[in-house]
Image 1 (cartoon, rainbow, N blue to C red):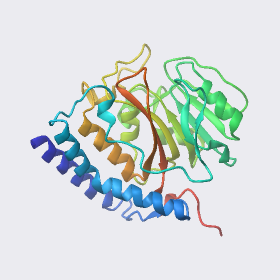
Image 2: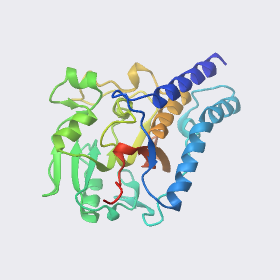
Image 3: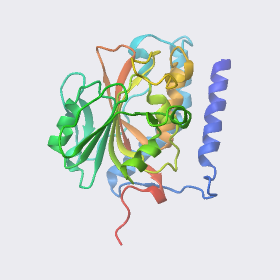
Length: 299
């Protein structure tokens, strides 16, 4: 029970932090990113999921005999989809049916100019090939562990990894923050972020705040709860999971609460049969600060 009390205290601290004024003294006003019935329903589901997460986690912990580290995919059971894609953008598979393909809300509806970023490739570019063929968007691949290649005029490869500010300061030129990346690419917004970086997703998302510019509309991420050791060439300072042996169910609850607070709802979850300690998730941003809205009202 002490761990549950600590978990509640952390959630309360997060709630205070995210409801307070931003660094410029302005309180972010949340707005929906779409003005239709689907958006209202999605925002309601997001609000309900956020407000019930602590209770859901506590009840789930009791059902697991207070074991916060169940094996295999059981650790992800709390995090099921609770919103759908917009009706005009149905959920579908993009890329191969096996590992490498991703579930997304119809990417072909993206309107130029648009950009898709793929973090982590391991020289497998089938996802990039699919979105290049099926969308009008530019695509950028990032991976500091391989030399990579360029697939065409709308594709760029960067031999860099994305981490937090401390990592970027220790490895300049090889590690950049998300905000630095968007600045280097000259982007104000991002249509889709696909991230499969074997546990290093946590430092990337940890730097996102409610007022962070250019957060993606849609995220496809493989979340890992196990300890991952860097592949050859991975920056030494880019340790995943902050030195923990793994991410407990409570750690994961905080992670998913963080994304929900940023306005993201879970659209899809897919079990990876080849990886019992990871799971694929698709998120869609439903709400955010008024000044950072995806779809400004017409003039």
